[in-house]
Image: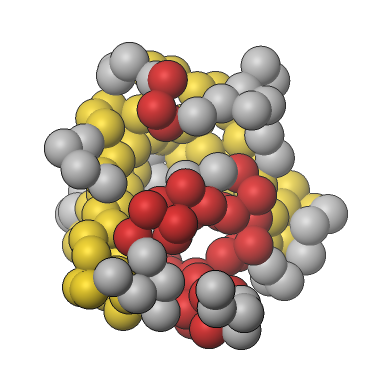
Length: 158
């Protein structure tokens, strides 16, 4: 068994926690955060799936991770291990690049008009990728948070 790594990213998003949560846990929201570098396919039978209707543990299915939205570079065999309390999910999945992958996201109100989004990734990359994997995952989630904040920063208020 290899070494596990932990990467954490946290951002204050200029929008209400309920609004951010309702978008951040959809495949459209995930895809928006990943673009333009990556995208993810919706697993078979998971179109329209809502975390509100999932009873954990729930295997969602295999999603292909595609570079530039076209070239398959990895897969994520998604399992939702926990949902809640509050605006929280815990995904425990298996990826080709990381046989052990855990992603926890929480969205907590800061005030009526902003919230804190926190992602914590715990993963064990395949052999040979140990030194580069934390840098790649860190850069990817920095990008995701930048896209998430930008999305809500340009939306009209009201």
